[in-house]
Image (cartoon, rainbow, N blue to C red; front, top):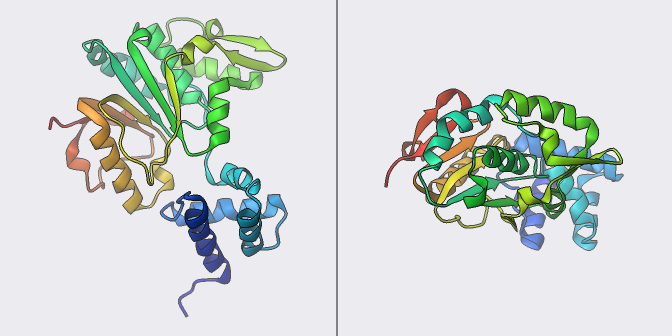
Length: 275
């Protein structure tokens, strides 16, 4: 007896099937988290077992987007953790001003809250017109929402306060139009953005990024996958490029920690060691 339950076995079979049939690889996500989300999907999609859910997903490809919405985390807010954005303004932007052009990768962009936060910050700091943003995620529905840039108006009070605390130079209302209970963000904020389906698990590095922001994503991966992603970020960064991760994440235990130095320790902003 290994202690593995039938449900645990069903979950492993489902993850293997997703990879082999659809090339979505969740096999190295943190097991407790992925199990919790799969059980939630089973209940809310109305299946009696994980095996029944697996059969539906394999035989009806329209079920896949429903399942991806459970397996990929889509909870965020604009200027989440305002001190992170204040640190970018005060301790990273002065370095970015020295480059003639910039490339920024928002990895795991979800519905785009982080993208619009950075685009507004870069506009306020005079960097937007020389920057190309790459916003990537594995969930097509999340990418579509990010491209639309529309958020419930009842979230905007929180977004506005976060923006103020981040050191915003203007009112957040300058960047959106209220429309039937929604905040529709100015499309000029995403005019220099490339939206792309990209998997941190299986896809290759981007080239010569000056800033990578990937916040609250590594916590959902196991140690091997975290190491793989940190290596991917190191390969993607330009000389002395910056990496920002979530407030509960760290590179301290990564096999690739020696490729970075802490730039703003308290806000988890790192700098790539010169090659």
